[in-house]
Image (cartoon, rainbow, N blue to C red; front, side):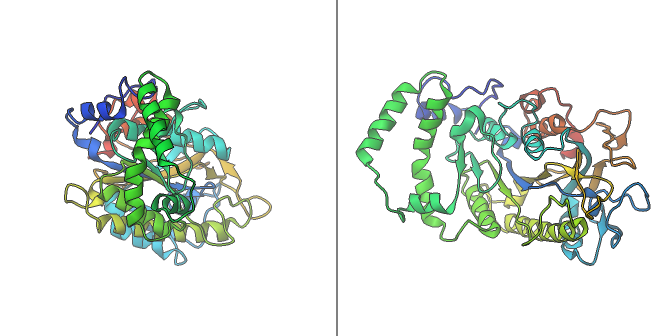
Length: 403
């Protein structure tokens, strides 16, 4: 169920959580509000020329010389025998995947790029997009936004965010020694329920966390696998979505040992290995969602969108150490429910500089506005039937990616 989105993001309305939830359940939901979102975070800054944006035969760009042009599932990409999972993924899921090239991050800092792409906002007080979407479309769920490994900027809606880990789940199951005092917790909850009647986000967050405890304990009793590894986190997100406990989630993709996406050295070796692991894991994620049931009886993949992001790209040319340094233009992928896939949108010039994205055709155009973090935020808002200004500020959305 849903509530109207309020740009001020200032906590609960008057009354207790129970009273608010009762009011929310009386409101009709819009079609897209039942869609889930998984943000799959690629930490470190990938080199889009290795898969998404190769620019074959262009002397000003040094990409992967072992690769060749290929197309699967409607997606043009750089194919290499050392990365078989890339071809396998696009063969299986390309028709449900949209690639965006020429995403103009506007930063070459890891921290700033992460914040920009996840919040769509240059300010340091902004909430990340999955938290905002959870607040707008899953406010009454037990665990609206599940962080199972990844960056988080919860802002005033911190009470809707749950940082899930093995330790937290063990504590919720009662597997860890605890000095928990039930009588004391009951007194705290009663005080919060009485005091959190105004517009205080800190009290609202505290009350929401207390109210979440029974659902978390029930979930923990069912999760009998570790969530410290990516496959366990994927299973956990699938369980949360299948049971209708969460609307959004985020996880950071694992990389092979002794490699990193932040390839200031050994760009060829590290990017090649990281892309192979990435697409193998994305294939597992899509298969898990396709094999899992949603609360309405369909598959989770038919109810879930996956947004794959990295905070920046890599420079067109190799440095003296055979690596590539930071670059403010990157690529992104949207996969899953209602995505108009089998296509690459936008693009870059022969210097890997972002070109504009024509909002009517999806083609790269120097006469069109850039597709930047604010535009990405606004595009997500449209995908959930929200006012683009609610998530994207002044960003201009690209509605054509939604079917």
